[in-house]
Amino acid sequence: MLSLGKLSMLWSGLGVLSTFTSAFTNPVFWEDLADLDIRRVGHTYYYSASTMHYSPGAPILRSYDLQNWEYIGHSVPTLDFGSAYSLTGGEAYVRGIWASFFGYHSTQNTWYWGGCIDFSTSYIYSASSVTGPWSRLATINKCYYDCGLLVDDGGTMYVSYVYNSTIWVAQLASDAKSEVVSQQVYSPPLDVGYIEGARFYKRNGVYYILVTHPATSEYVLKSSSVFGNYTIKALASSLSPPISGAGNPHQGGLIDTPSGQWYYMAFVDAYPGGRMPVMAPITWGSDDFPALTLVDGAWGSSYTSSLPAVSVASPTGSDRFRSIGPHWEWNHNPDTSKFSTGRNGLTLYTATVTDDLYAARNTITHRILGPVSTATIKLNYSNMTDGDRAGLVLLRDSSAWVGVQRDSGAYTVRYATNITMNSDWSTANTGTTTASVSITGGSIWLRVTADIQPGGTKQATFHYSTDGTNFNPIGSAFTMITSWEFFMGYRFGIFNYATSALGGSVNVPLFQLDSGTPE
Image (cartoon, rainbow, N blue to C red):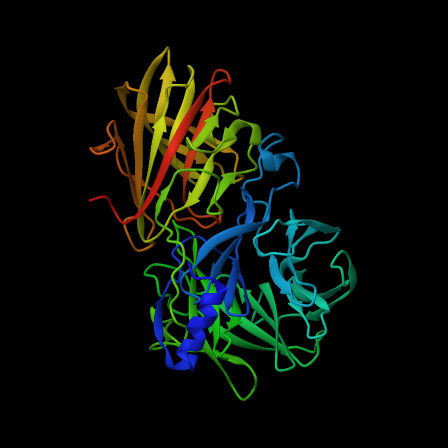
């Protein structure tokens, strides 16, 4: 990875940056990264996204060219919003972190993240470095729902948010620990309808709030004053997406380059994988409103870019769990006493006695890389105890897994499906084993290949190997659901839970993510 110093030398050597053109394709990153808030500091771009019930929350990604992204941290180290977020006092599925604000205050040299949790309270976190450590700064007893942050020219911080189907602006205190004043700034007309997803910007002395009419359109509010009056104009309305079978691009943000180019990055509903970021250039009209650059009236599948492509850490490859990297998130807060990492990889001790995967603590998850990718783990299972279940899961509100089960001292590799939730996210079915094979030896490799293209097969296949080379299919292909109500897309997950008693463990010395299907 290039250092900032080397990048400066690269840009200096290029001379006029706008003469160096590359291209980017959509989606810019085929992973589930919705409700984006994207910021530039110097020549570097930072991206924050929603995570709901996954912990740590609010991932931070970094890019030097708006097309190659890498995970570098999280703004919310733990979801300390109540016991349900740790699966000890209920569950918090489809709650937690979404549509939050993210930004940098240059004169304070401070990063801020803020969001409304459970429709009641807003939490603000801060850090002097974008990679952390992040910590909770303040709790504000009102809901900044679907909010955006603007640090004005003089350093005053404003938050745009949604309340009662209208757009409001709040001024924060200089330390961001309290609110100074707030007021309604816009009420949408009937022909626009309900709007949300407020993002706040300023350009050439003009204030802009981007809002979305879910899940089809994006509008821009514009005013010469931070508290209005605001006028409105459509930016994107029912545009054909650059991903076959996906929804319309909406709910995004603006970003500029050091040389003055502007882009709008949105997301598209692209289930079963989730909500994927797409980007298009914009220009500014004589009315000071932005306009999208379209290709034959649709969102382009690719565009030229004036930014030189800069490689970052690849999303594919192997992870030997010397530590938990920022591309991993737990299903709810983990029990930190029940796992370890180091030279031998990841060890998961059983943390819950249950027959319900959705109630089991310490399932660690990884986003699926589209359009098709394959996850493989090596699982050392000799320290499991009777009743334990451990393996690799395709996780959402309808799930399936391949894993090892120990009963009466004997081990089997199994394929389980029909693991489902009700509409209130309680467990409907704990699953059915449809295939099993006796195994010995203490180690096994487990593999899942998933096609998350909304216009693809939407199927996953499951395999196992006793030697790491020759893989055998197990069970039938699993068809992933495409409903949006769970919001988060499918993920790969590694789990270990007990059905009889705690005390067992498994070791995972390797996770391998590959693009496409195995050869």
